[in-house]
Image 1 (cartoon, one colour):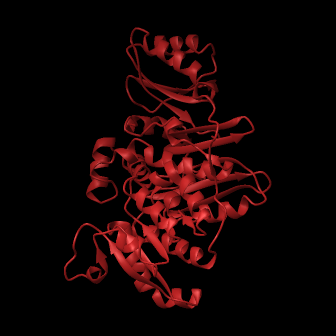
Image 2 (spheres, helix red, strand yellow):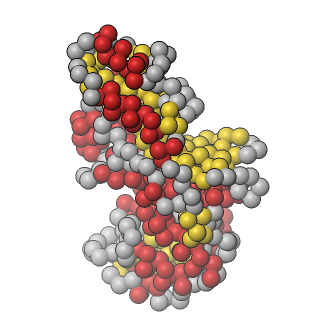
Image 3 (tube, helix red, strand yellow):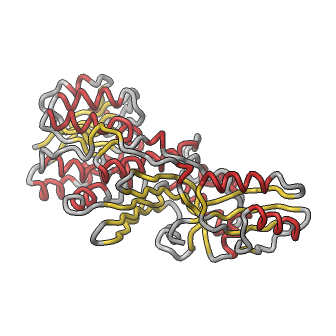
Length: 412
């Protein structure tokens, strides 16, 4: 018999508690032993509930209990999650988590501590929620190199952008609707500003290169500036807009970014709708694989955690996926992208002539969405710093305002 503890009884922790109880017979048959919950840590009380007999308010009741084999950290954030996780690992307990913030910042230290104490630190649910990503990636990396990671890694932003596209609604009203349906937090900044997707990308890239990728150094843009007019012009080209997390890996380093991008509406990532997520991995030999599913939610995340628990109990030791050595991120200004720039103007002919003069080409691809006083165009590929200078100059042209500029997804 394996005895478990859950630290944090919010959405994820309560989901793990429920899955372990509801699937108890099946888990016991598969593992040839039961997993039973002995303790649940939470500062609240739940009188009369099923969890009440297991509750403790003191982490020491878990960490110092030699009968507890495995701990689920479902607290979120860095503190006290890091302290409790480190203490549990040093006590020889396996720890499983969905805490992307902790894994992206302190994951290398925690994996090293797990190895030193013959335990496992596992975090499948920190990247794709219910999508199995880390485990297959770990096996593929035994014989393959990854040259590219990209995907739609945040369900909240994907839901908002999908609704904007389908219903022609504005960002603010769609965000309110997402909050009303429970798809967005009361404070949605981590999602809509791109930081959640950035942390997930950092975890994936760290696993791919075997070194710590500092998420704070990845250029990150959110979706709050995307408007229904941007969608109208994208649709004029048969395209859509997604928040894309992208990392290209070369011998020189990693070129990484998180930003809303234009991509074909029928492309593999373009068709990922609603709260669904997708991760695309490009390998040296087998080319590309796409993994898609629900990237968040109580039961998908809990299911991934319980799966990690089972693996930790079956395979008690494994080397860390990455070290504390920091990976090289290439300068953002040198990255090359094509763009869609959207303008408003007082004189259409003058605005288009100015754009062509500034971008030094007559080959700009102009789009017509039928919106009076606006136009948009696709640029050829340019270095980020070059584009920034040109679009700034265009915005200073009399009678022209640059309303927005969005990168084109590289495979468009």
